[in-house]
Length: 368
Image (cartoon, rainbow, N blue to C red):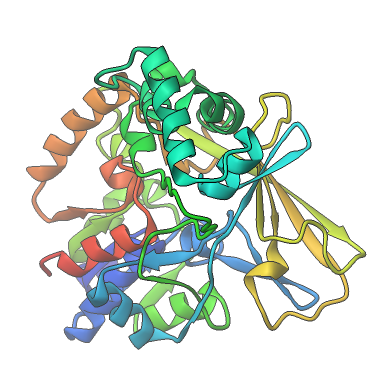
């Protein structure tokens, strides 16, 4: 490492979406880029594998969606994106409901047939709950969709996902939840929804053309040397770890994935089914072949997704959005803002929940 001192303009720590987009921009600007990742592959959580003709979303389902034309044009300038409408289902104790919450959901739950009836039902339950200004996720959810939907389709799933009571979680987590008074099962409101043709691996490979890539390489195992190799660092890992846990350890949620090959063509009829009761230990089942309209495999592969509290050695997937962690994260973000020569970006480095289009928006705005 010492012999290569300052060989690069940018060292990018983490080959996830943020790091790869910044790498692409830097390379296009004529910069020399080294991107490293502790995993044995690039792409972060977008990474896919193959199983006899079926592309598996290795770290959970990823459907790209955006209403930002600049972002949409950018991703399609890299590879072609094929339209995909996300219409997941919810399973509550064996009863199926449409997601997002829409007239199909309201009809199945209450028997209502008009938007006015559904709105009246929600308003009645909101008033009975006595919520004026929502102060947590539970109150925010009830104010949006009433107590029946909260108890049936939100509470159990959310508390499994986050490992905390809904009353302890920030209302911000649920504010982006789509609610419709139409018979529309399209989960996202964005103008464009798609998956890259050929899968996310091809998208990432295109972004990294021209970069030097080192996988199975942990920044913190070689920190002293790594910080000397480039003029600037782009850091996408855990922000608290970068600062040696100066203000304490931030909390994250992690995931465990359990795959199963099933010798039938179609297991559940849809890409994603959420299990919203509290007794089922997993939050959802993913059937990967439904992401690819051209897949004609005679078998199928499903993945059960189990959330749990993060511990050392696990992958941190989600920042925990409660008051204690948000307060600590603000201190780390203040440190990051005054750290010369380092750009912090992405979910872990900013300790914020971002969708893919948010990540790309931020990566496109970084001043290089």
